[in-house]
Length: 201
Ligand SMILES: Cc1cc2nc3c(=O)[nH]c(=O)nc-3n(C[C@H](O)[C@H](O)[C@H](O)COP(=O)(O)O)c2cc1C
Image (cartoon, rainbow, N blue to C red):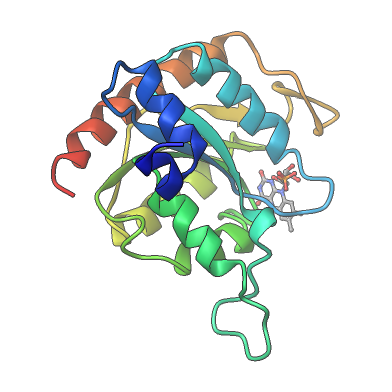
């Protein structure tokens, strides 16, 4: 195992090999819900499947639930997952946020996870894939305001999935074909901006 893979893990070595020595961009696909029975993983895996076919970056799912973050600063909370959360986010050049709409905003879990970090987010790009009764549009617009504050450049193209037409019974994900193109258009912008912003970090 080489020097970089010791520092950052095996994936980095594979990424470098795939790109002929030049390190590939790494894009984290962040699952924005920790709710038991959530549909978020179905959406995240679908985005990753589309992304992996492009061959332009190393895409990985980052599941907030894995880190078991208590509310930030909560007395007696076990924040032992915070260091790993910080490392995962820091290792990325850009993000795709998988966003569900909760009371016209993002989930409390995603807001809390965003609040935990600052430098790790700064000067990176992100796309938003949202879902809800009106495509999660209100949650996505709230998220854009938050991303501005943590210096993440959020791209314009925004795949918005309807709980009525892209899901069966609101919980089995069956996206319309047209949504695939939207994800690719969003990723085109995320890759371009992630590469550009890497030069100023
Ligand atoms: C507390 C709560 C509030 C919700 N509020 C909204 C809402 O304002 N707009 C909307 O479109 N869907 C709303 N929903 C429906 C969620 O978007 C839907 O359940 C979605 O599947 C949640 O994502 P998840 O399964 O990945 O957690 C709400 C769901 C919950 C549990």
